[in-house]
Image (cartoon, rainbow, N blue to C red):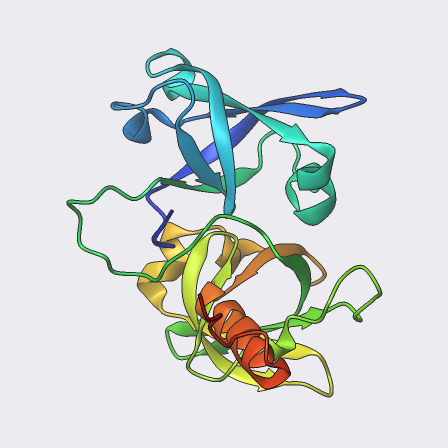
Length: 219
C-alpha cells in the first residue's frame, strides 16, 4: 500500500528484455534504499514492483525490478528509455503521516496527455482515456471532480471530468511540479492511471445489493 506522495526521482539505468518481460534497473535511488531489502515493494511511476537486487551505494544507489508482460502492457513502463526519470515511493509504513490517499500500486489503465495550460504558477493538465473495449472497462465512472486519482504514482485531485470526451484534468502547484516527472511530460505522452479503489468497492456493493446478492444468508 502507498500514499501517492512521491519520495524521490530515480533514473532508468538499464533495460534488459526477454520473451517473458524485462528487468529494469533504476539508479540515483540511494535516498530510498537505506532500509531496503530484497522482496520489498517500490512504486515505480505508480506500479507496485518487487525489488530483486539492489546496492545503496553504487551509481548513486540502484535497484532492479522485474516487469512481466502484463505490467508492460498495462503501464507506460515499456516505453521508458535509458535516462528517463521515474517517480519512486516506498511502501507505506504505519508510523508516518498519511498525506495522500490509499494507493495500491495496481495500474488500471493508461491515459494520454492532450493539453497543458499554465495558470499563474500552477499548471493545468488534461488527459484522455482510450475507448472502452470488451477487455477494458471505462474508468470514467470512478472519476468525479474533487475526487482522488493517481497519475504516475502521484496522488492528485481531479479538477474536471468530461464523460463525453473521455477526458479528465488536474492541476499541479509549483512545488509539485518540481518533485515529480508529470510536469515535464510532452503532449501525446502516456501516463499510468489508478482510480480510487473506494469507488470500485462502492460500485460492487451497490450492484450486489440491487441484484440481491448482497443479502446475508440465514444459517
